[in-house]
Image (cartoon, rainbow, N blue to C red):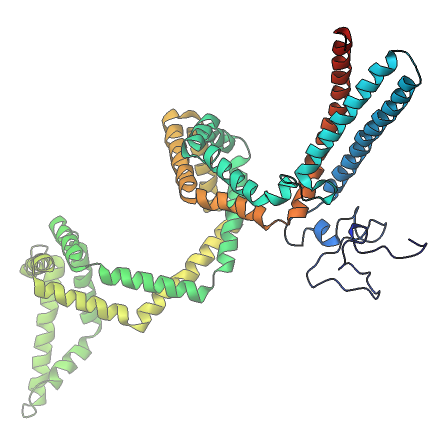
Length: 478
């Protein structure tokens, strides 16, 4: 290649589609990630794209730490290859020395170097075959990771599902951890209850801030209305009224009504007389109408005064009997029950009632927000005390610990049993979504350094084995 000429399509140029930006070469296809050589200031680290390093691109993610590992792999490759070159040089020199009539040591050295070369080449082939095809040749059972990536992903998912996501494995692990006791000790520790209360208050404020008042009011109104409509009120009201009458709890109400009625009559004497005289026939004399009105007023005052002052008045007994009978009818009479239920439905359907039900949310929301923001509020104080008390009990009560651990284990076993297929499929689908070359480079960056030691060990062990074999052969007359 002449100086200054552009290299042909191939790895040196990142493939035929990797033309220079702004040059006249073929532009990369949309979505193709070009890998530019590392240069300071180009936004890359050692051949990894900006997109990969930033973690925004699709598929496998490469980081600066991965690039550092890849540099370590390259260093180890250089050492292993250098050792192979050294063994080759030693073999050449030892063979030349042996042919030149050197002593027996040349044969031993040549045998050791030859076996070291064989071991190094064999291990190089084995290590290289994991990640790519040696020399690009389509040799069977090479480039194992790129070609078997999807199979590895499925096997890994099955392995995780069978050995880590088993219900019994999860239960045993959770039982050994003693989570309930640890949680109780943490909650009972100084400052933990305050922290939990603070975080819970912040979460509550966040939830209330996100919720739309109109939506919540509509839901509350519908829920209350539906619940009230589905609940029979006649029979419970009848039982409550019967209990009140039996206990004499209504007497105070009767006393209050009698006092109010007496006071009203005393304050509205003229109005009562006028109302009565307006109802008399038109042909009667007016002085007679007035006398009738006065008479009616006096009888009303006497009747109300007697009820107010006489606890044994027959009218009080009539009220007792009426209320007792009405309480029984509310529980047993279908017609009375139906009338009460219709009245309840009509009451719930009134706009005023619906607005009252919906407006309760605003009051509750304001109350909860104020209590959540105030560190000295009754709500936060009770939460702190409750968390601290619960933590102390959970830390010391074996029965409660066993019950809490059992709930946690049951929940974990349910989640594992229900979603194990989804979890394992996440592993296999994620691996399947990786680019084969990227996956190979990623794995090689993490384990390649150790694999290069295999090449080094193969060279050394091969040399020792060759020396041993040659020594045995010479000893037995070879």
